[in-house]
Length: 129
Image (tube, rainbow, N blue to C red; front, side, top):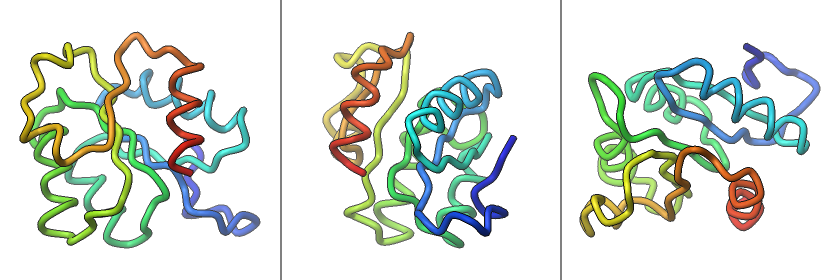
Protein backbone atom coordinates (compact mmCIF):
# COMPACT_ATOMS: atom_id res chain seq x y z
CA UNK A 1 0.00 0.00 0.00
CA UNK A 2 1.14 3.52 -0.74
CA UNK A 3 2.04 5.56 2.32
CA UNK A 4 1.97 9.33 2.41
CA UNK A 5 5.09 9.34 4.60
CA UNK A 6 7.20 8.49 1.56
CA UNK A 7 5.55 10.81 -0.95
CA UNK A 8 7.92 13.75 -1.24
CA UNK A 9 5.76 15.32 -3.96
CA UNK A 10 2.77 15.95 -1.67
CA UNK A 11 2.96 17.83 1.62
CA UNK A 12 -0.76 17.74 2.49
CA UNK A 13 -1.78 16.06 5.73
CA UNK A 14 -3.33 12.66 5.12
CA UNK A 15 -6.57 11.07 6.08
CA UNK A 16 -5.63 8.19 8.38
CA UNK A 17 -7.67 5.01 7.88
CA UNK A 18 -7.52 2.64 10.85
CA UNK A 19 -8.88 -0.87 10.28
CA UNK A 20 -7.50 -4.33 11.01
CA UNK A 21 -8.99 -5.74 7.80
CA UNK A 22 -6.71 -4.92 4.84
CA UNK A 23 -9.56 -5.14 2.29
CA UNK A 24 -11.50 -2.44 4.16
CA UNK A 25 -8.42 -0.22 4.20
CA UNK A 26 -7.81 -0.79 0.50
CA UNK A 27 -11.43 -0.01 -0.42
CA UNK A 28 -11.48 3.28 1.53
CA UNK A 29 -7.98 4.23 0.39
CA UNK A 30 -8.78 3.59 -3.28
CA UNK A 31 -11.98 5.62 -3.12
CA UNK A 32 -10.48 8.58 -1.26
CA UNK A 33 -7.36 8.71 -3.43
CA UNK A 34 -9.58 8.69 -6.54
CA UNK A 35 -11.22 11.80 -5.05
CA UNK A 36 -7.80 13.47 -4.69
CA UNK A 37 -7.10 12.88 -1.00
CA UNK A 38 -3.80 11.78 0.48
CA UNK A 39 -4.33 8.62 2.56
CA UNK A 40 -2.34 6.65 5.10
CA UNK A 41 -3.23 3.30 6.64
CA UNK A 42 -2.86 1.86 10.14
CA UNK A 43 -3.91 -1.74 10.68
CA UNK A 44 -4.14 -1.48 14.48
CA UNK A 45 -4.92 1.04 17.17
CA UNK A 46 -1.34 0.99 18.40
CA UNK A 47 -0.01 1.68 14.90
CA UNK A 48 -2.53 4.53 14.52
CA UNK A 49 -1.41 6.21 17.74
CA UNK A 50 2.24 5.91 16.71
CA UNK A 51 1.53 7.46 13.29
CA UNK A 52 -0.52 10.30 14.81
CA UNK A 53 2.33 11.11 17.21
CA UNK A 54 4.74 11.47 14.27
CA UNK A 55 2.54 13.17 11.63
CA UNK A 56 -0.82 14.65 12.53
CA UNK A 57 -3.50 13.65 10.00
CA UNK A 58 -6.33 15.86 8.79
CA UNK A 59 -8.96 13.27 9.71
CA UNK A 60 -9.10 9.77 11.23
CA UNK A 61 -11.49 7.13 9.84
CA UNK A 62 -11.58 4.61 12.67
CA UNK A 63 -12.96 1.08 12.77
CA UNK A 64 -14.50 0.08 16.11
CA UNK A 65 -13.99 -3.69 16.26
CA UNK A 66 -10.25 -4.30 16.29
CA UNK A 67 -8.13 -6.65 18.39
CA UNK A 68 -5.84 -5.23 21.06
CA UNK A 69 -7.02 -1.61 21.16
CA UNK A 70 -10.56 -1.10 19.85
CA UNK A 71 -11.72 2.07 18.14
CA UNK A 72 -13.25 3.56 21.28
CA UNK A 73 -9.94 3.15 23.10
CA UNK A 74 -8.05 4.71 20.20
CA UNK A 75 -10.41 7.71 20.18
CA UNK A 76 -10.07 8.15 23.95
CA UNK A 77 -6.29 7.90 23.66
CA UNK A 78 -6.23 10.56 20.92
CA UNK A 79 -8.39 12.92 22.97
CA UNK A 80 -6.87 12.42 26.41
CA UNK A 81 -3.33 11.12 26.13
CA UNK A 82 -2.33 12.86 22.91
CA UNK A 83 -4.27 15.99 23.89
CA UNK A 84 -5.88 16.38 20.47
CA UNK A 85 -9.46 17.47 21.20
CA UNK A 86 -9.91 19.01 17.75
CA UNK A 87 -8.64 16.19 15.52
CA UNK A 88 -11.72 14.99 13.59
CA UNK A 89 -12.49 11.30 14.13
CA UNK A 90 -15.20 9.40 12.28
CA UNK A 91 -16.09 5.88 13.36
CA UNK A 92 -16.54 3.47 10.43
CA UNK A 93 -18.51 0.58 11.85
CA UNK A 94 -21.14 -2.06 11.37
CA UNK A 95 -22.40 -1.39 14.90
CA UNK A 96 -25.81 0.28 15.14
CA UNK A 97 -25.63 3.86 16.47
CA UNK A 98 -28.00 2.96 19.31
CA UNK A 99 -25.37 0.51 20.58
CA UNK A 100 -22.71 3.22 20.83
CA UNK A 101 -22.89 4.90 24.23
CA UNK A 102 -22.96 8.67 24.70
CA UNK A 103 -19.52 8.50 26.32
CA UNK A 104 -18.10 6.66 23.31
CA UNK A 105 -19.74 9.11 20.90
CA UNK A 106 -18.36 12.08 22.86
CA UNK A 107 -14.84 11.28 21.65
CA UNK A 108 -15.78 11.20 17.95
CA UNK A 109 -17.25 13.58 15.40
CA UNK A 110 -19.57 11.16 13.68
CA UNK A 111 -20.33 7.64 12.54
CA UNK A 112 -20.28 6.08 9.09
CA UNK A 113 -22.01 2.72 8.89
CA UNK A 114 -20.80 -0.35 7.03
CA UNK A 115 -21.43 -1.18 4.32
CA UNK A 116 -20.08 2.26 3.48
CA UNK A 117 -22.26 4.61 1.47
CA UNK A 118 -19.58 6.41 -0.56
CA UNK A 119 -21.70 9.54 -1.10
CA UNK A 120 -22.19 9.85 2.66
CA UNK A 121 -18.49 9.17 3.27
CA UNK A 122 -17.43 11.82 0.77
CA UNK A 123 -19.83 14.36 2.27
CA UNK A 124 -18.51 13.79 5.79
CA UNK A 125 -14.88 13.82 4.66
CA UNK A 126 -15.43 17.10 2.78
CA UNK A 127 -16.97 18.68 5.88
CA UNK A 128 -13.80 18.00 7.90
CA UNK A 129 -11.00 18.35 5.35
